[in-house]
Length: 189
Image 1 (cartoon, rainbow, N blue to C red):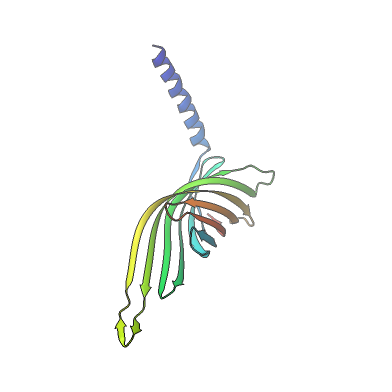
Image 2 (image 1 turned 135 degrees about the vertical axis):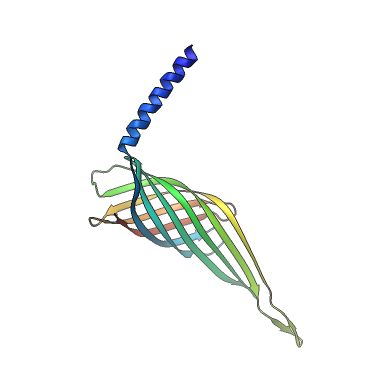
């Protein structure tokens, strides 16, 4: 009997919290934005990355949600071979908005998950030794990995429907962890 009563109390408390949270929710497409910045992939040179994101609103007054897609690539020569690596990521992030005394400035911390489609290529050109030509070759591999993103930043309103964003994220991705620092602009609907 005590277990049934405890379960009923938990259910009622959870229902009350869910109702209060949903009443404060403002979930749905609220804006679109672009990002550009530097990416420092593990064991590779720093490169430029680009991204696009959708502001999906809040499901709690201080918790915002976004979906995103990003891209970066890196090419370099290794002796007689040329190597390239690229990452296309699609994911979602949750940001906890920190209240400030200025309603247009919103610092945040957040976390997210993303799927990374990573492609690496190595190619060599033809080599001629002692009159004999050794044909070049090309190898490539594509792999999909799941990553965890942790970071934070600042979002500031500069006009009625325009926000600027500065943020830094660290992506925990198997074999290719990466630090990303970006700046962006968001248009609010």
